[in-house]
Image (cartoon, rainbow, N blue to C red; front, side, top):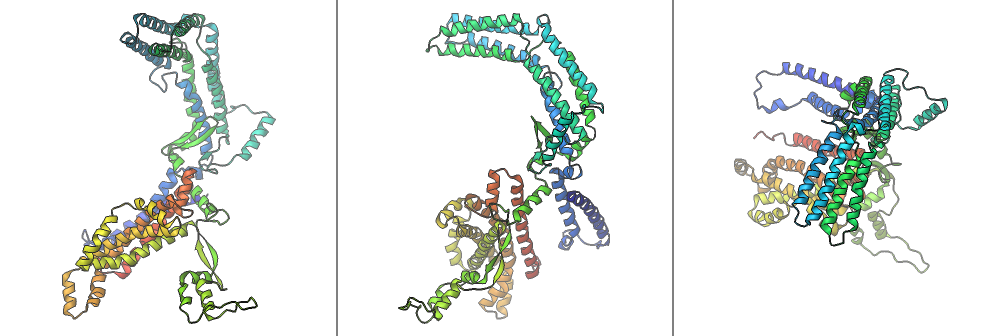
Amino acid sequence: MITGIVTFLIIFAVIGSILYGQRLVKTEKSDAVFGNPERAKGGVHWVIVGSSFLLFTWLYYSWDIAKAFYPKSANELCQVAKVNESLLSLKYLFPIEERSHKSTALIKRENINISDKIIEIQNSPNLKEQDKEKFVNLLNKTRKTIPLLTNEKYLEYETKNIIDELTNRINKLTENFSKDTYPPPLSEEEENKRIEALKKQLGWGATGMEVPPLPESKVGLKFHTASQELNLVSDEFFAMRNHHPAYLNLLKEIRDEIKEYKDGLNEEQVSEMTYIKEIKKLGQRIEYESVFPPYALDEMEKAIRAFDKVQKKEQGATRIKDMLLFPGGTIVASGPTCAEDGPGRWLPKPSDTFRIFGDLLKPSVGFKMIPMIWYEMMGVNRIVGFFLPDWIADIMPGKYPVHTSDGTVEPNFKSKVLDVVTGEFEAFKIPVPTGHIWDSFLRVFLGLTLGIIFGVPLGIFMGLNRFAKGFFDPLVELYRPVPPLAWAPLVITVFGIDNVGKVFLLFMVSFSIMIISARAGASGTQLSKIHAAHSLGASRWQILREVIFPNSLPEILTGVRVAVGMCWGTLVAAEFLAGTSGIGFVENVARKYMQYEVIWITIFVMGMLGLLFDVTIRKIIDKTIPWRGKG
């Protein structure tokens, strides 16, 4: 229901935005030249079009639109897939799915194999002449078994009857399949059992990629019943063998000769044992295959073609839904079960994804007993104790209290200060964020902030001072090209798997980026601006604050945008390696259990958080450095 409404809203939004964009173009100045940055400003309506296109693509290729408008379509396609699977083994015998009869391809292949084996034996330097003669004789006898199977005069009456009976059953199924009375009504007891089973059956997508296998509609029941009948026909056909007395007598003769020869071999005759086993396998392949005379199965082929044509016609609207609403794949059957095969399998549906995301947000569910993001009530005393260092109490005048002779301890001013800085006092509580998303957000924020605090001053210093550039440049360039993942095992080993190690790794990533950005900004300051400041009597500090730093800000903030992306990628990798919370930890666990919806949720969350950081920085750029790009 919600997906259907969203789909219609997307269509209306796209159409409305395009019409608004065309109307806006007519009102713009006609003399706006190409390359003017003013022409790139605004365009919120195109943002709507782009976002709507992305969401619509997700809805369409995840098959969520099909699920919203035709919730039983997957179940009907499941029943159709069962029929196709049942037909597959039978159609494989004939030039329907293949280029030639299976018997023809088999005979051609085995004749080539026998001829190749004869040449190989005759050219073998490890065999005696009498052994070569024996092996060639056995292979020629094996070759003679093929005409015994393909000669129509040897086809037994009982085998013909089975083929005719199976053909008649397929023809009868074809005749009844297109009728409204098919399948025949079940008995009251069987119908009650079917209804009870349907009540227990979960809906499409209720268990991830699972497609409900029991037929839920009249069309589905028709195909389901037909697939059961075709399975019986297929099983009976492949249980049948065209093994008549003449073939069996020759086969027994070959086996007896092989057995007699093997019994006469010793352990040192390795080549002879290898060849005799290969000859036996050639005969077994012919024995186990369904080889018939060339025209013995013509009527069955016609019957299968006729049914295939009727069943495709009876698919009707189901086939149209499959073509239009299931792009890139369809529903496939494997025995009694069905599954999505295509983008719907690995691309979770938005409806399922947001439903699962809603469950992960709940503290009662969460992921590994931790919600994705929530809040907890925390006393202000814990916050104060976290930020205030304990040494504040140590520098207070006086001594800490000592217990009295009666076993009591009287607090004094110094001990009360210690209680405050350690958070050991009563205070009101405030809501504080918690959860996997918050943990990852906080790690990125802290690592990025530390990188900015230490990297920007050092970068500006290196851009203005040859000593700083010469001294620090080798140190920075030594570790900057190394991928962050290469540092991760070492950092985690030194600092542990808690937040300190991850924050330090993110600091290393952002630190080098901020140094390079700040150095480029400082060294790129126009000399004319510095001379102008000198001529106006500005001091060094004033030049740094009013000229160099503002000139460096565009490069610094661009570096921040780059560092944000690098920090997110590094954090997820670090949480993959060692972590008990965070988005990377969630994705790693979900990967192990193949929880595709959860994996896509983590990707979506990381993208949204990265976008939030980037949009925030872009707003800061627009507000704080309006001179950017204007000389």
